[in-house]
Every structure is written in structure tokens, then in C-alpha cells.
Length: 245
Image (cartoon, helix red, strand yellow):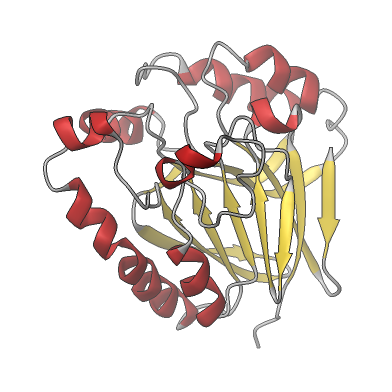
């Protein structure tokens, strides 16, 4: 289990993605069975939580969390396996989950506040399936870095502590282990530049099943790949909070 801390008053985040329920649900259960005594501030899920947008299957994952760990909030973004036409059904069926889709929220914690900017993220190049089935997707990805930038600016007006949560990778650095020629279809390094410029200290993503790099420090930014098939475990992120007065 990866546990990385930054100096200061901390918030504790349990993060994972790519459960593809039911495929990797036994691995999730094994990963959290020893965490019953812990109390997490936030659970963050970085997409591909089910296969083929099976809304009903998500209830199994949620029950595993409720039965095994304690947490104050649960936040999720959609992956490519949560189809766009099913997004509202996920939201309506599981309102206890804070679903973010190019949106932000501010979580109030005893230790302060935590802003979360959530998105599927962006690809440097749309896949062939996306080009065929998602009209305008290339233009959407072209605009996405500035969409993310504006969300960060907005949430920082309310809270100085920001996590970027996405399905697709915001960097090349955590893609090591995947074939180099498919990197443009796994993430978008332009997002990393935005995160650095806007002073985001923590980014969490999934999607990269064969990534050998758990996390990278890039100056003031730490980026985590929390894909369950890659890590073989959940990831615990301890993030320093700037307290608000």
C-alpha cells in the first residue's frame, strides 16, 4: 500500500480506480480489509468503477466500502467505462457519492477545507472509437486544459487546498510500463503544466493499468496513479492542509 505524506497538518485520502466491478472487486476487498480501524477524511474514486456502464453493479462496490471502512466523504469521477448517456443515472442512483464531471466542490473538514476539481480528464489524441462515436471530442480535448484551469481558479477563491481528480492521466511520467505509442491515448501532459501553474499540489488519476510508477514528485506537484490493477492495492494519500481562518 502506498502512503505518501507531505509536511504539515494532514488530510487522509483513500484513493483507487479501475475496479471494473465485478472484475477487481475481490482485490479491492483484500486491499481494505485491514483498514477497518482507520477513519478517512475522503474516499476518492478515479473512474472505471464498473464495466460497460452497469449502474447496478456499482452498488456492490459501494457496499464493500460501507462495510469495511469509515469515511466522511466519497467523491468520484467517471471513466471511459461509465458511459456519458448513463451519467445522470449514476448520480440519481447513488446520491451519497459526490460525482464530479468538469466540476468542483469544497469539502468542510475539522482540519480545514479541501477543494476537489473532478474530471474525466483529457487525452492528447482521441481514440478511434471516440472519434467515431463522440462528435466533437477532439475539440473538447483541445479546450480541456483551460476548462481545468478555470475550475482551479474558481475553487481557490473558496479554499486554498486543491486536489485534481481525473480518470485520464495528466502527465506522461506515470505512464512508464505502458507501450510508448499508446501514451497519447492514455493521458494529456498539458494538464500537468496547468496544475503546476495554478499551484495544485496533489493530482490523482487512474486508467493506466500497466503503469509501473506509483507516483511522481514534480517540483511542488505530486501525481498518483491509483489504478487498482497497476498498484495491486489502494493508495493512501496524506496531504498537508493550509488552514483557513
